[in-house]
Length: 328
Image 1 (spheres, one colour):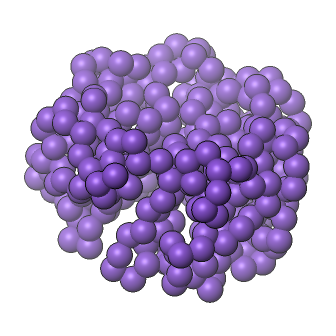
Image 2 (image 1 turned 90 degrees about the vertical axis):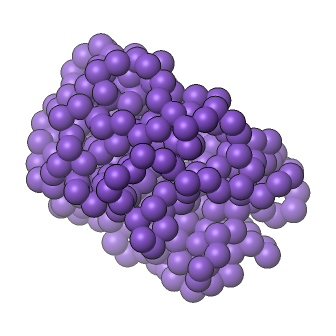
């Protein structure tokens, strides 16, 4: 959680130090991240690591570093923030995947580091990197980035989308199921995209018209098209064609924030991450009753979802490790 003053608080699983409080103790309530001598302006949480962009435009990461996802030139876990090598300034956004991380520069370029076994770093190789490397062909012109488990996507300033990495379920959206080690164009998205979210093996975008399109794995209905059929190119999410202001993607579920402040979710609901008070998957968007009235921001973790409403955060879904920010 990023506070108004730039401070960071985290909670939940902490076995690799991903909460950044200097310990390996799980927390059911928010704890301050230590060692941030400068405040943050953006944060991102991966599977077992966390990163922040500071107000000085540098990137710091902490938590698991088994796959070099902290980008500090080592594979040593960190229980407090550490600088990403070479990224002490000139950065404006960061995205954290399962075992890799990517940053967006002020010039609109993309740099990635960590695991690269599926080509998710986009440098044309399958070689892991413990410091940031440039994504091939994306040294400028990018406005937003998103990281899934083992794939990465970028929105260009022209409103198009490029993806790379794991593609076994069509999550790259290029009409194939072939992995790519460098960025390729997502089919059918020309000058229409303003935001993007990546789940474990699926991807969703918010269009400039306020609609939502998704593609990739759909075994739990996380594409929201009324089926459980995987899609290798973007399809409209049922009923969301013109009034959405933000989107989020978890492991196997997706959510959208409507301009009215209502949150709707779809997909896997075994841990009530869709919040319909049941446990069956939902293949079309449904309103998250009782959790998200008048919301103005939205985020999704692996099996949980959070919405910011005025000055309160409402979370729902799995709470095994205290990730809802309250005691079970």
